[in-house]
Length: 304
Image (cartoon, rainbow, N blue to C red; front, side, top):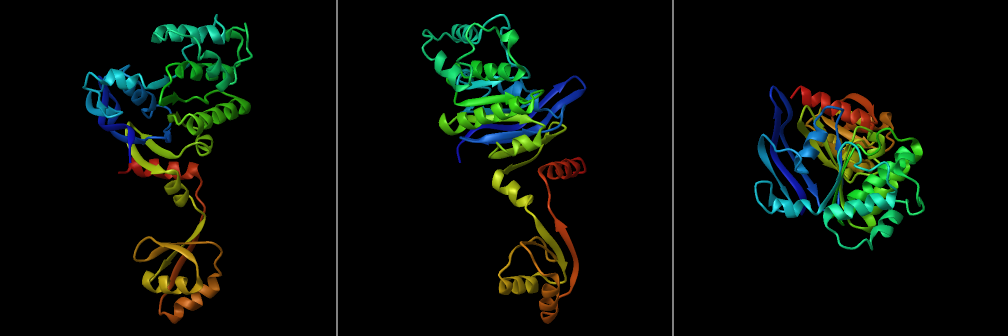
């Protein structure tokens, strides 16, 4: 698998405070990577580091195959567009004027692509309206437009849904999906709004206390959150034989526990297990939401 960004044991300290503690992450090319963590977990610090706004205290990272210690990391960063914390926009300028200013900063000689970017983010009809009169959602979309000015392959968005109303959140979500599907842009999106991320992300990284607790794909996460019945038995080999005969979908977890998916008649299962000299010790329904998965994961991380 090809990775746009790989970090290796990145640590960032501010005197006595450790914001990043040996963080390792990998973002696959073409992914929408949901970077999940509560406020203060280290999400923004990591983003500032990979954008070159801060240097790591130790560890290293690779962006498009270029290490942060190499001179060519500057060229690699030109393939990035980012919103860090809040959009960098000029409030007394129109959307078009903001983009023209960014084109000048980037040294882009022609303004030809500006209308297309404004249309992409849904701001092509704002005319002479100044950014100070935009809604918060419009300002966020203008910030994304500015980040797209250099035609990036990798877009980094730090809490883009913060403070937005439901309509604004939907607009940002649809824009990110469009950029990923139509423009093939890899996206790193940090957030603590798990329900919204679940509608976007193809991959997740869960961070707490500056450490990466776990990285999973959407499929792995859905499998973990899948509704099932968790059973404890005296012999999972016998359980496997019974469930195979019953045509049930299941997953053996340990020598004594398993998850059974779908509707199972417990009395029928108990009777079949008794014939195999296998005892059904306990049965528990399991239907884990993304929020509870995260809470359990972070709780486990703290005790690790």
